[in-house]
Image (cartoon, rainbow, N blue to C red; front, side, top):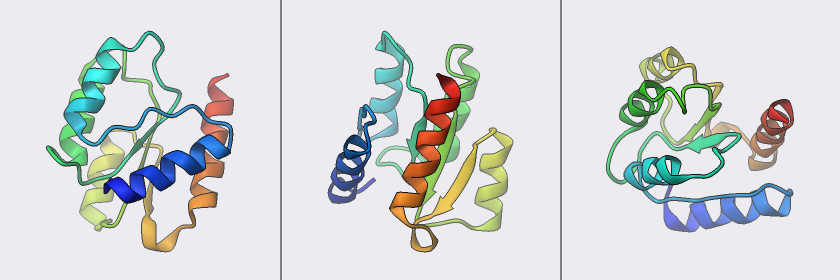
Amino acid sequence: DEELLLNAIDRKLKLNGLSVIATTSGTEALKMLNTAKKLPDVIWLDYYLNDMNGLEFMNILRKNDKWVDIPVIVVSNSASEDKVKNMLVFKVKKYYLKAENRLDDIITYVKELVKEKS
């Protein structure tokens, strides 16, 4: 996400008791996953990344057997019907349009996903 918004989301998630690893690109996120000692309980994904789009990221993510079951939510400014359908093919849990959803509601859903994984 844009750096200012990324920092705000990071801070809000941490204030809600969640551990966060924030990255600014898809490549950086994939590197973090590749070297992680513990995989994340949830991935919060913006459709538009600095170096790839959400479909490209999900295509790489779902091809790796270690990452295939990580729940992913997409939170983006863009949610055409085709984008949402294409992301759901990759078993994205939810696709949120930023303008139509409150940050607190999205975080509540993230916390539910984390709780399910425990």
